[in-house]
Amino acid sequence: MTVDTTKRQDRVGEPLPPPAGLAVQGQLPRWAVPGGLAASAVVVGLVLALVGFSFGLFVVGTVVLFAVALYVASRRVEGSRKATDRLVTVIVSSAFGLAVIPLISVIFTVVSQGIVRFDPEFFSSSMRGVVGEGGGAYHAIMGTLIITGLAALMSIPVGLLTAVYLVEYGKGRLAKAITFFVDVMTGIPSIVAGLFAVALFTYLVGPGARLGFAGSVALSVLMIPVVVRATEEMLKIVPNELREAAFALGVPKWRTILKVVIPTSIAGIASGITLAIARVIGETAPLLVAVGLTTALNFNPFDGRMATLPVFSYLSYATPGVPREPYLERAWTAALVLIIIVMVLNLLARLIARVFAPKTR
Picture 1 (cartoon, rainbow, N blue to C red):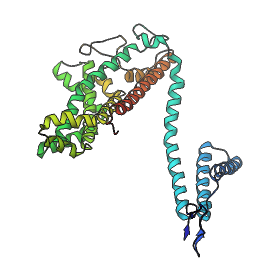
Picture 2 (cartoon, rainbow, N blue to C red; picture 1 turned 90 degrees about the horizontal axis):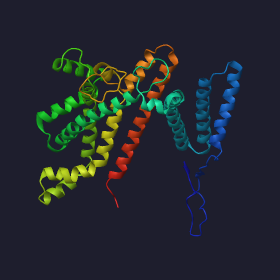
Picture 3 (cartoon, rainbow, N blue to C red; picture 1 turned 180 degrees about the vertical axis):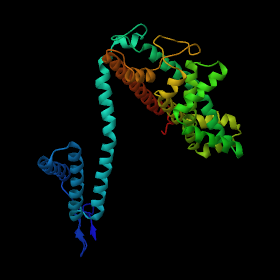
Picture 4 (cartoon, rainbow, N blue to C red; picture 1 turned 90 degrees about the vertical axis):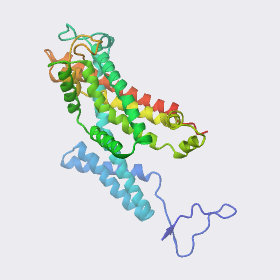
């Protein structure tokens, strides 16, 4: 059994001696972690230099050797509990680094490839009459904003009111049925939403109908369950004491919801809605089948095809013309612009959550 006597002091500030028969728990020096990592890298590098160097094996071997060496050293000096803690810390840190590597790789690739056409012409020109170099994605950017805006306009009220009903009023079979269908819609493939929109507008308008509004309907099918779930979870964490206090003052339930429940959870609701918009703005499959593609600018979602950034990027990369380079450059730049839009929406969600968060002081 070991005890740590570094925090035990007598009245004059001096450490007390350990009880008789108990060992003093040691501690590894501060340089043990960076030094051990560097030594492990050197050892693994020398071994791989003899048998054939591989960067992947170098990273994995360094982490494994460092984890084993740190665990053994910590167990001998600090005890089994601290050694286990250090081992788990190394495993978790390694898993985090492994998860971050693809993200960094994607960001680096998109930025390095997309910065080539990140110029004013790309944001002010369409592809109408352009073959080869030149042109831009202004029509696709506007199409994405219009279609996503209409989808949000349809999804937010429906999702918000559905969540309020489920949390505040929902009881019995109807509430269970709504919850079941929301769960089913949460896992629906995006291409199914696109096919649903195509079938719906084929029945209403006629065969071959491709409209921007059809894409909005497809996106709303994907967005509504996300809004419902986000809003529902935020409403559930509102303390019941707030509702009971309002009821005790004679406030009707509908007014309690509007004046107490929703304002208390508005930060989380706004953040969830913004993240739902960011979730659907990059969908390609439903827009490809429901909206199609055009090279001209179209501001009317109820008349004709519209271009969107995901479809524009996909088709420019998958079916480039001759020469290939201008099409590939436009595809990467469109992907970069889409990532920037999603990043701005996520930052906006954090800002909204901070501004509307309930004040604790």
